Amino acid sequence: MLTYNSRSPKEQYYQPMVVDKFTKSYVVPVPEYVVDAIEIGQEYISATFEYRLDAKESGSVVVVIRGEAKVQDQKIFTGYVGFIPAQTKLIISDVKSPLLIYRAYCRLNDDDAE
Image (cartoon, rainbow, N blue to C red; front, side, top):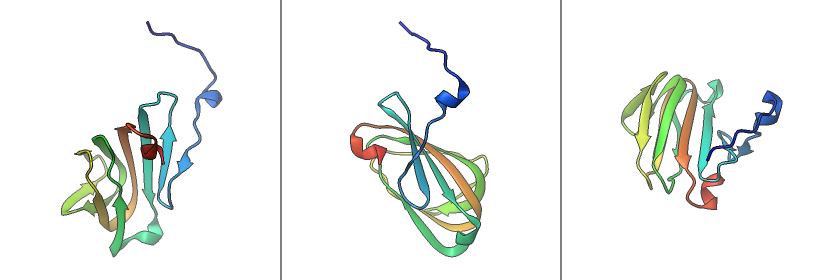
């Protein structure tokens, strides 16, 4: 049975955990679910820049909110939606404009929350 608790918008805002310079994790009250925000700013626009996305225990869904870059040989851009299989490491490179990506996945162990 579902139960809903009413709270103010301010009480529902979650502070992210800073994972590294580019990634923040939003660990919500549902223990299995995490959303990462990956933000690469203007100062990193370069054909030689690389950022490694760590592998997760479960598959991930990614949504590009803004920006343009490459992941492996695949171009990503504003509006792009993709799936990353479990245990897959990827490299973001060739950033052409400031990038904001959200990555949602199931947290199967505590390491995925960091």
